[in-house]
Length: 344
Image (cartoon, rainbow, N blue to C red):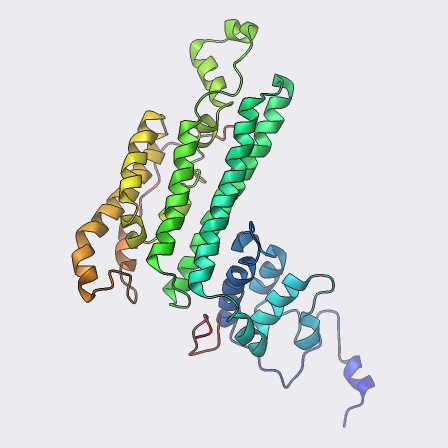
C-alpha cells in the first residue's frame, strides 16, 4: 500500500496530478465540447462573440487534448469563473451534461444575431461621430485606425465563428434553424451596405497637399479617409471585410437573403469594389440562386429546412475562388460517444 509521501514523490511539474479512477473523454469529444461551450457560455454576454470567449483557455484545451491541465480540482482557475466553467465542461462528463443544457440552440442563435447587430451599431456610431466632429489631420489617422480595427476584429470574429459552427454542423452536433442563420446573414449584408454608403472622406486634404499631388494620388489619399475606401475599395484579398464570413453560411440561409444579395451586388460595383471582391460576391449570389432552383425539391417534405447533410455538397462545390489580384491594407496598420453535443 502506497503512502501519501510515495504518491507525491511520483509527481513532476510536467505531469499534473490525475486520478486513475477518472475516465477521460476521447480527444475529439473534448474539442467539440469546448467549441460548443464557447457558444453557450458567451451567449450570457451582450457583446462577446463565441471565438472571443476565453481564447487562451480554449487554446490550452485545443492543443493539450491528450495531456489536459488536470483532472478534478485542477480544472478550477483561481479568479476566473468563465474559464473554469469552460475547462470543467470540456473535461468532466458531469459538468458537461449540466452546462450543455443551459441554453437552447434557438435561444443562442437569437442572442447571437442580436449581439452582432449591437457590435455593428457601436462601430458605425463611432465612425459617424467622427464625421460630425472631424479631428485635426494630426489626430485623424489614430482615431480612424481605432475604429477600423474594431470593424476588422468583428469581421474576423464572425469568420471564425462560422468556420467553427460548420465543424459542429458537419458532425450534426448542433444545427441551428435556417431562419436564425438567415437573420445573421442579413445583419452582415446590412453592415456591408452601410460601409459602401460611407464613401465620403472624413476630411479633405489641405490645399497645399492637393497642389503637390496628382489627381490619382489625391483620389487614393481620400480613400484612406473614408470607410468605404478602407474596408471595401482597398479590401485585403486574404481577409476581405465580412466576405469570408458570409461565404461560410449555408445555401438555404443565403436563399432567404437573395434580394439583399442582388441589391448589394449592384452597390459594390458602383462603390468600385475590387474585382476579386465582386467575383466572390457573385459566387455567393449564384450559390443562393442555385438553392432557389432546388427549393421545391428540398421543401417537398413540408419543412423547407435543411435535413441531415442536405446542401452540404452543393455548398462546397459552389464555393467561390479568390481573385488573382492582391490588394494592400488601407492603413498602416464535444460530447460523449454516441451522444449529441447539444445534450439532447
